[in-house]
Length: 101
Image 1 (cartoon, rainbow, N blue to C red):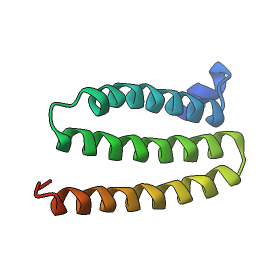
Image 2: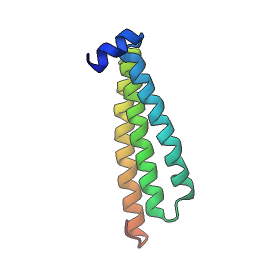
Image 3: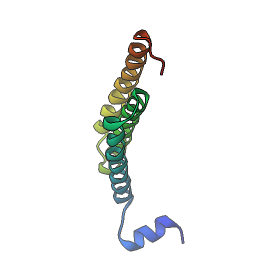
C-alpha cells in the first residue's frame, strides 16, 4: 500500500496534504523572521529576507494547488519576480556603500 492509498483510507485528500505543507512553510517563515529581525550581520538579514520571499512564493503556490484557484499562481509568479528584483537592488546598494555581501 502506498502513502497516497493510506491517506485516502484515512480520509485525507491531496489538498489536505498541500495545506499541511503550506502550514509547515508558514512555521519555517516565522522562524526565519527571527533571523531577519535579530540577525547579527547585514548578510544574515538579506539572506533571511530572500528566504522569506521564497517561502511566500511556495506558500502561495501550495495554496493555489490545494484550493484549485489558479490566480494564486499568478500572484506567486509576480511575487517571485519582485523578490528577485529586491535581492538585486539590496545587493547593488550594499556594494555601492562599500560593503560586500
